[in-house]
Length: 401
Image (cartoon, rainbow, N blue to C red; front, side, top):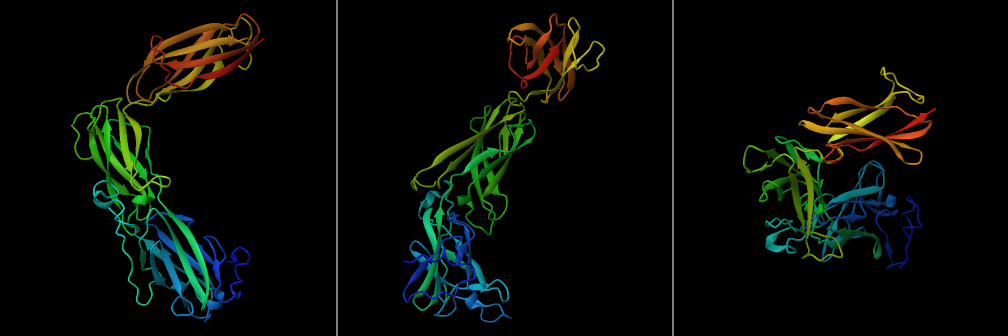
């Protein structure tokens, strides 16, 4: 076998191979091209063949694959259909079309890919005499390949091929926290569940909370035909019991979404499955995001910014602290001053409470007694007795002369 695809330019299709010779190509080659290198088992496969010699009439849109001298065959493992492609425009010499892969319903049997009996169709087109350029259907598996052969002249063939593989799904919530009484969005991405590229596919998955471990079944709906991305909405309530897409939660609950992926890539076998979970919180912001501390600065006793600090001068280390939660938040604002040897020379704090989404200008005073380089470390905690960080700590260099 002679590999010519990497050696001939785009417009050099008119080579003359030896009679009976097959020229192999791959996706992305100069002769036969696919829109992907790897497809899922129910993907739509777009095929392009560059064949300037078959641009018979520069004023018409030509076809290839319609005679015995330019036969095209599209195949997966154990299945094949005769095909024809259509020129992309007058006088282009580029021919295209697509085939739809239809999976194999026997792999998962009656349980289906979602455990509820849903399977791909696995249909194959009946062609008389050929199919194409857009009505071809071919069964495939999750460990398969698709090939296209084009008989350039009698007994002179070029081929192109691409892989067909299952994918490992992904699950996530679109936000790390949702308010009680709000809507939480769960997203699952798995091209293998895009069973019909012309339709919006659906399947159910499980969601539960700390307050309701039994949870609910949520309908996951594809975001559009042929996207392979599915989303489901969960309504969080603390007043009502779980029902339909409504989930009972309490403030601070962890809410968990689950996806059982039954179409896993190699080295998994078709009988394998993988459990995936994603979590979010209800009515509670994750640690270090419950509050934010920003714009740390040094002010004098009258509130004016300082760029230079003198010995025995009273200063204030101030930050803007915001409560990011939908509830009142107790806090402790701590300022620790260390010298250039890392020795703490001052530690002070104030405590209080912030209303939902309130921003406060908090500060602590300090009077340096010696010149040198110092660092102010600023902490926002839940309280002195419960030193749970509400915000990421910040630092502020201070030069005393």
